[in-house]
Image (cartoon, rainbow, N blue to C red; front, side, top):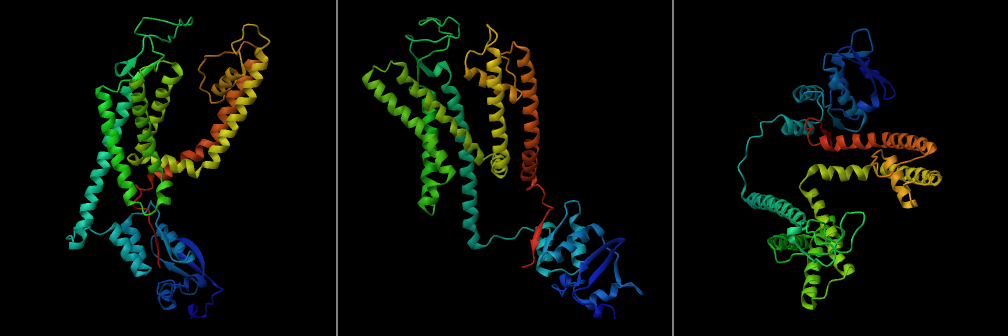
Length: 400
């Protein structure tokens, strides 16, 4: 009779194979069809002479079942519990039938192949077409990156022998050595690499046209990152072609400032590397992690900027006491401070004062502590996002 005199303000004491739990009667009464919510079903497990209930069941699984009652019918299975054991516990406590059926179909059914319906054939065709498009997109994106690499080689450049820059300290204005790096160059638009580049651009045009057709609204198209990437992949090549045709017609494009435009356009082509985010899941995960941990990343950036200015400018002032110092201006001092703070240490600049040595040691300590505080949170978020699709046994269902 104890069960029938329990009010909603009372608490149930549950003994699950030796593990004791307590829950309000009002929480279990919200689910009257379950074993704990129905007094007639619950009375069978009441310990004689006591007010607690004993269930010889799996204790680890009961934590998820207890959460089901106190969180409005949300069921979460721990990843350490086998699916079959958890399924038997859910059935024993007679939770929502639809929930149990969904869990069984997702993780325990044989997944027998069902015949395709007539109306699903088009879905299958579109699915195959989408996979083919993704494959072609990955191939042409790889070819475009390969073409960009070839563009940096001297074989695919039209080198002008009138102006050269060599890495020698004296830096003569003219040089006939073809092994040195050219200062003025124009990409060779008559080579095989130019043909490969135009084929890749034609595919990018096709993807851009297809994305424009299937986009439901112009507003959504403008703010789509993939749309911006397609534009940045196509525009540099088109501008290079237009600029080269003007040069070819006039024949007087020999000034350094004019030919540097090809260098800038080549740098813009590097944006095609970001197209790999459509095919490499880890890059998408990295972008999500950076977005989630934006505050931590900004904090780390501010700490590094503060350290660069503080230690760089301090060492610049201290090094001016030394006649043969290597930091000739503030820009070099800030660069040296940056290499010290992030602990790279290129050794292109060095200190010569005792106090500068001390500040360098403190700068390395400061940078290491700053990154050690922030980076663990970013790493943990990356592991969560990276492994979430692999954890098929970790589920979350809601009753309604």
